[in-house]
Length: 614
Image (cartoon, rainbow, N blue to C red; front, side, top):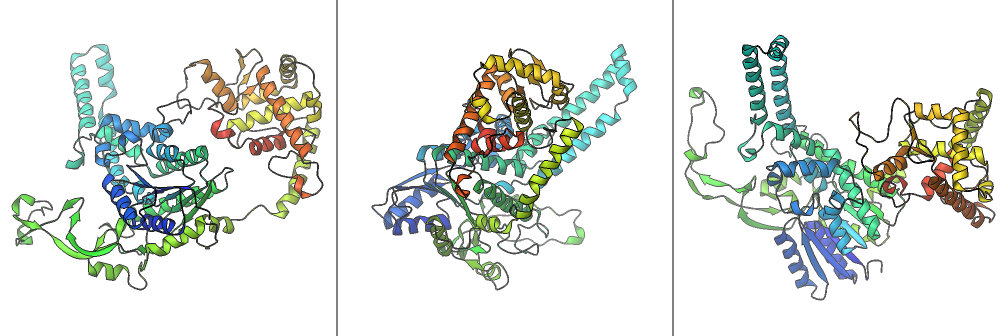
């Protein structure tokens, strides 16, 4: 059996679907171990207790915390995270910062998700977390209103400052100095003020609210989460990742009436749906990325239910609902309607009602459950059905419910017509190059500067030897070749072309560069970038500088040798000779050889900076 002897990690394992998947695995297979991961410790512990009671011999462990943040923050609520300036700024770095392998403090090394994957090294990772809700329900709409109000107020204050007053103040006019200082004091007050901030956010001033807005953006958080997931699964060799996704609206459209009190169509629910399907798109990309992990997604399009029916105390916004005798008010005598006045009402206890526990979706009264599951509304699907489909997909059976496979079958793949016309376009370009005397190597519009760098390096190397076999038989030293490339570069005028495109050229001595008016690497919003250590210069060279140093000539020799050997291994007749690792020509063609490099070194873009490939 596929999962017999394998380690299974279930994220969101306490949820309805997570628990049912765990039960079916325990019932039908003999896993090496199942690890239940949940947001809260008591949930994870309870899930393990329930499973142990049903399957005493099942090897079980649990872990807990918020997998979207670093481990040290994983037990904090969102309010706790956003009530501390240092935490907010760290969240910003974790979302937008580098992922250098050499940095032990970066989010990949510190994130709870990557630590769980590294610790348990799962063969199968099941993700039953409602990722779309977790990422989208951060009230970015309210945050945007606050930031706009603050920025608009500051902008008006700045516009109101008379330039002549500043000039007089600079000249020493005491009255103007007083006026300028007063304006500065008002600006500072704006930054420390709390325009529109609720009591629960009392530690957030307007300045920090700007940071909150940045770290609450949906797409950067989702992208960073998926990248961390991919890197961790690739590192430990996870066989399969299965996502239990969401449509965001339970299968309904913009007409969904089940919102959180906001107007329809609901901004929150549309944001949630956007994240849910953006996540599917990113999983589609992961599924097409070479590596050991198979990526799948099952996306229920209805209400998932249910755990049990019982009577329980009702909570709203995390607090129990208090019962109190109502008072009568005459609307015609009110100047305003006080929406929060708890002190005026005497509590008579807490409200309890019978209802249906639908797990992550909430606790619904009978009327709510009847309405939401009515024919033509969300209706509902059971977690057992979802779990059965999940098990079938993990076992290799085709259920037709894998969203990633559905996308793969729906997109338009490369066509015969495109393959037929490709060499015609290339031959026309080759003819035009010869007629014009201008080499058509790269413009720099396609992809990263690394692509442009590799294309120009290949073009220069082909001017020394036009064939791989020529390089294979080259007896001169790397230093001699580097000197020739330098000479070829300047004589051909390519130095002007390359540097005009913003690509520096690192000369053979390693100390000097040729450069133009603009430099694209290192990427920086600042005009002046500190030089830093030599490692920084090597990193920039790997990212996008044409490199004429002898050590880079040695790297190219290894590539050509690898291409030659792959060609020799593929000497059989027929279609079997062609694969991603095959370079079928002896002739060095710039674009073809770089395409082969990107196939042959699939982690080039992700790991070159870390030094693993370069």
